[in-house]
Length: 525
Image 1 (cartoon, rainbow, N blue to C red):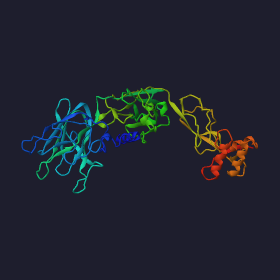
Image 2: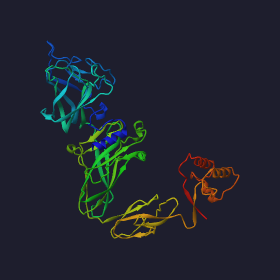
Image 3: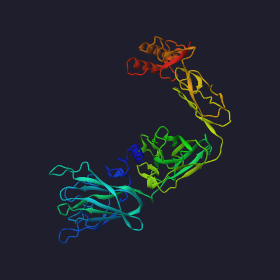
Image 4: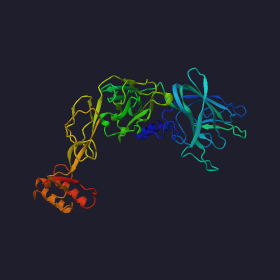
């Protein structure tokens, strides 16, 4: 799932790292659960006589104001920036920080921003405990890592990095957290008491009390799981209350692989997303859950709110299954926080939201409906193949009368092999066999009553050059006339008119400014 999240966020170009990875900036982790919240020092002391502790704002209750040295405030090599940096001078070896979240949340990591580890400043995370509404703490395991802050001053004596972001990533997501307690060691091995120095403390995860999308699933077509039947299930992200509308989503699809075979999953997007989205769904259709992922990739996405999805049944997937066995089959969008399988939605400013409160959103496909078979068409090198359709057992249907096209080739009909040279079925022919049918277009190069000519070669000398351009210009000036076939040959831009624009293209081709030929056209003789 984290791979998919990273891909979605990279498309938005407004978050800079995989969610819950080591941060390069505060924005990289998504939502800071402690922003504009206070935290309190429960235990700290000082070796300075008559001083019980020294914080830069003269208080042991400090506000997370979002400021970090090197961003909108200057670095200070002594005590940091007043009102921004936490400074506790001369502490003993244990300092305990406790804070209360505004609402129950799922938490993945803590980040100490702007930590100074140099000279007389030292910080090491000893332990982390979390508590729910009952206030009973339990210790959590974590992995500590740090990254140097780019642009921060180096140490004067050794020119080494001295300012870091330190991250404690939990081994497992902590659920329903209300309070967090952090124990710090601020005493060096030599026994000296050191200054605790950092800009702010952040917690990252997602609050369950904030907006939460739901998932809605609906069956489109036969609701049967009889062997051979084809079923389409539409799954949408609904109940959208995000401030800026959705521009991307993940849906973890789970289904009974003993009963159903996943055929395809096609994104359902708003009309103005056509050609402006990317399907990030997993390539391996056998994965469980199967991640359905789609994101808008319009160039002006972040400045055009026309793309922002706010209405139900506008963003999701049309999922096609084929039943491979009889009986009931359950399809669901799996919301499971413990396995980190849940609806994911990204709004237009990059806020990552998780639909963890929703139910499984299941549908049951059942019944003893008639066996259904798929008739599929492949243009086999051409374009414009008919849309696939189905037939029921015992039924006779007609093949599509839609005929594909291919430049320079004549359509002969349909065959069951891509390499066939003779057609087995004509367009519109009847089909009654109770079996799936995959058809491939059969082509014949050229036609028996025509000749293939290079587009632009109005002189018919087997080359396209400035002489052809001169003839086209004279024709456009009505100094000479072309027969119908020659006019078609001269229309290299295929706009239905042979004129000076075609002559200009021919001249550019002759000068090597256009490297690809204009193709050919078959002219009846």
